[in-house]
Amino acid sequence: MLPKPHLPDYLLSIAVFALVVFGLIMVSSASVVQSYENTGDTYYYFKHQLIYGVIFGLIAMFVFSRIPYEKYKKLGLIMLVVTFILLILVLIFGQTLGGSRSWIIIGGFSFQPTEFVKLLFVIYLAVWLEKRRDKLQSFREGFLPFLVLLGAISLLVLLQPDIGTLAVIMLTAIVVYYIAGGALKHILALIAITAAGLFSAIKMFPHAATRFTAFLHPELDPQGIGYQINQALLAIGSGGIIGLGLGNSRQKFNYLPEASGDSIFAIIGEELGFIWALLLILLFVFIAYRGFQIARRTDDVFGKLVAVGITSWIIFQAFINLAGILNLIPFTGLPLPLISYGGSAMLATLIAIGILLNISRYTKEPKGVSSRRSRLA
Image (cartoon, rainbow, N blue to C red; front, side):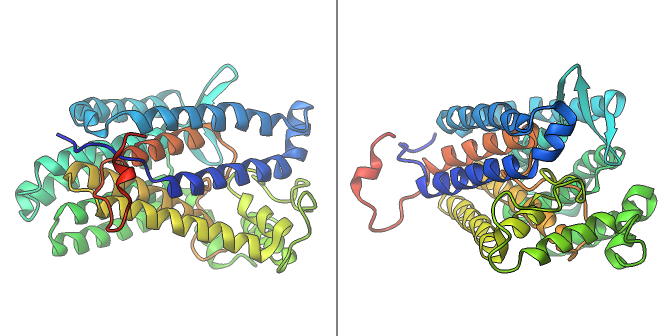
């Protein structure tokens, strides 16, 4: 039974809204060339993101922020089944874009199932781990079943192949498993397995291997495998401290692939410069802080694990995108949460934020908070 709810974490809401608005502005700027060439409408991508990503997403965030999160406990098994169905459907009917068979396209409608799989799996994992928290120190009853479950999900994602999503799912699962009470030796073994698995996957699939080569030696083939990362670094470098000015990017004129999608941080660096790029990173850090604070102040084990899972997923994905664009790790093609163009990613992320906000309504109040916070929002 949940305690009496209070006001949600409005600081988190404000930070998320700021990112969404900033993302819309940058999508509008970064997509104008591609949008006009593909549709004849300079702002088609912006309008599509606004309607199908942001408006639907914010409505969904509000709705899910009002649904008591404990209701999802009863839907755990259904969410697991839906997860497997989505991953199997994309392997059968999915279309390959950017080297991965990750999209289902029906007429003019397209969506990326793995964006919703991240959320569904986090919730199911929290349900499963809460029930088994007394057995998690056991190899046979805790670690081994967890490894089998994670392995089954990971295999289906690997077959697409979507290495970036695979990394996010595995890293998020490791953090949630640790917070649930997993043995440290099992965690270390799982980290080693994850690192070995991701490295093997990179070597196994040509598209991933090409990106790994570009990471190690971007200068070897600047017009081929190193093209995207070289253009991204050129964009960021040319922006300097204050940038070239909003709308003044040169790279978006078909020089930088996926300028409004996976590579949008490079356009941000080029147009707005280091200062705004740093502020963007600090906003993600703030969201991480608020999300983990919500988890820390939640007494309910299930709520704590869901909060940790959602926060970890968003932050890991942001880190992987940013580090890839800066060539600190191999580029994976993951969208930057709440910023990049893509309705599926935006909708799934805002639903997850809505659930996180709902969890924040049932946390323990920090000392010194006014009694007014005890009333219903």
